[in-house]
View (cartoon, one colour):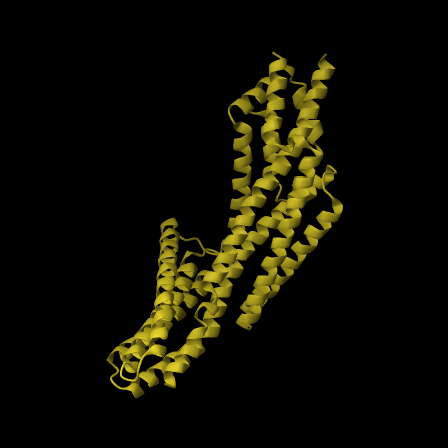
Length: 323
Length: 64
């Protein structure tokens, strides 16, 4: 057992939990008890630093905290390869979308500049690329749902099924556009595509916001975990209380806006309002992180020893002096 | 001598605990900030505004 570093690591690894504060109370006692082991402590400290154990323990602790939040938010368990493949499909769809968007602008410009004899052909080209843009956007959303383990299975299936059926309708329209021969047919198909877009826009937007909301929840929980860590540092009198208050107030705002957005999503509320609430929650989170940076920078100014490498040096020097 | 050693170890321990806590917060904050940027990017990628002009442009085709 690496007495001191491990004791600290264990303490930190449970800092997300309420029982943490109890274990922290006894830090000094624990160190004192360990220090009585005169022959063992110094050697173990030295070894732990040499082996990079301290840094390793910090990494493990950080990883544990990340995993605990992930686990807490897990709504369905997907095979790793399914997640990876869905993410790749998302990246591909994103690339395809950007490429289609470029063609979309070009085709629209060509249509506007075309003379009377070319107008039908240019309109057909534009409608074709409009459909590509539409489908790639839907594919991005579908891939994100397929990679998302924080959305319940039933809801994920419902979203995917809705997107599949929308893509099928749009694809059917594409065939009609390709086969349309007259200007009137083209105009009619354009109208059908527009109405379909208007019909599904609200639902698709709500699905997008659900994905964003679920990703945001992870960041929010991770930041709340940091907030608890800071509260523990506060016990040691290290934290600027005014800045901590600012940080906490932004965190409360971020959580409230997030919850509002989530409730609205679950009650089938307006997608634009959900989007606004999600954005406001993210903005509050950014402000909280800014406050957090200022807090940690201030602590570091007060205590140069906050650099972990310097602490390791102290430990090493202490151990060597004792030999 | 033993008391001095004990005191040095105690100070080192306290410094170490403080360093671990803050260092961890900084490391995690950087990581969480990156996650937050990723969510921003995702929100942009999935935003319906990316295709919002379809409605207006399709209407233009309908009316030519």
